[in-house]
Amino acid sequence: MKGGISTQIDEIIHVPIRLAILAYLSTANSADFMTLLDVTGATKGNLSAHLSKLSDAGYIRIDKEFVGKKPRTSAMLTPDGESAFDSYLRVMKAFVSDASR
Image 1 (tube, one colour):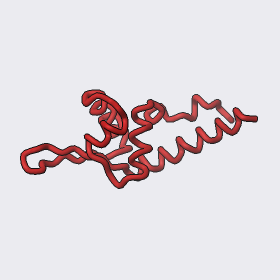
Image 2: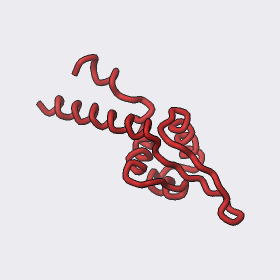
Image 3: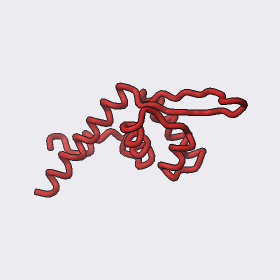
Image 4: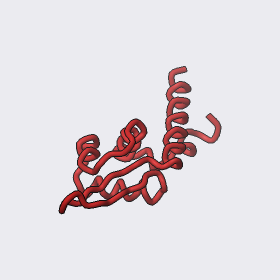
């Protein structure tokens, strides 16, 4: 692999909680905050920080609304996020393939 694996890995995605968020969102249309808490096992503050990081990178869109009097936060994968996640998976598959030779 030219340039080494470390130069090709998207460090935004490579963090386990962010990887779990993107993996889940890649198969779901969107997910609310409580679902992502369950999926990741993160604390509320930790999940919020990781969602902000993904949002700042343009990989997810965060929507906030009120349902009755309760706030509801949901996240959705953006086209840039989908592309970045697909690229990340290609790099990791190539790395695993090269490593198994």
